[in-house]
Image (tube, rainbow, N blue to C red):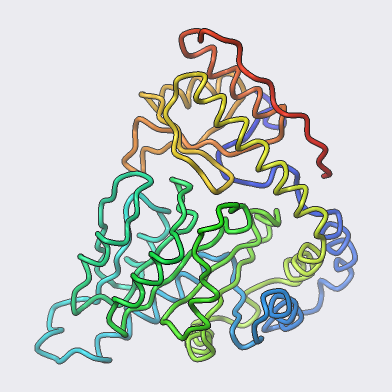
Length: 364
């Protein structure tokens, strides 16, 4: 099958594509490729600071949010043994990092690469992971990584629960809140991590321009923290870790509010349509505040194969220890409809016809 004809709903990408302003900015930047980029990305940091009502020294750019996660893991796990534990306590023991499983697989990878001891805390799909994480904290815990919305579940952490959790932690524990999908959230109770940071908590927030801002191919993310933490992470960073095209495109994308609004409208309407369709098909799915759904189909690998034969690519959950599930990104209306019709072919007929997608006026 021609790759261009495949409907790819596997990687949580923005189906509208990049902002026209971002594409134009890239074109205008091509003549300067013989020059090095802004070393610290100050124009982009300034734009983010203005948008988020922060100071420039609270922001750090990364080659994707995962690079910044790597910096945080190294800073906390490679150096923390000497900070507050005695030699007798630390002999033969690595610093610990906690994650609630299932979660984004790179969380595990960065912890292991930093030399930390990975503590995976199993949680019920879609449930609040914070009580179990708090119970797992020990004197050696230095890092906790949370996703809100969580990948692959799409669930959020409510504000009061996150604040209570952070207040209960020892001061040496850094909480990293991964908010790669935060722009898609419509639930009013989602944690306001910026407000918690402003209160002085030991918190690092990661955000991405790969998802709602549709710049996945340019690999650009940013960290938000207190100035001392940002300075510490900056010590891990190589010069020119983000390139000139990415910086130019990001600046333009941030200014294109119309494209972002179209992205969120497409996602909101597609999310509602797929939820209704999964229910009509009798499929269990987790409520989502992101741009994807985790759907229980019984035999995940079979459905991946069968959908691929019909020209639709979805995400395997085998590595997440969820063999009965698939993860499905929200696409354009016609792509969502194609997915639903393909699933209908694979399932027993339902008693009533499936609803068609809501007509959407979205711009590319």
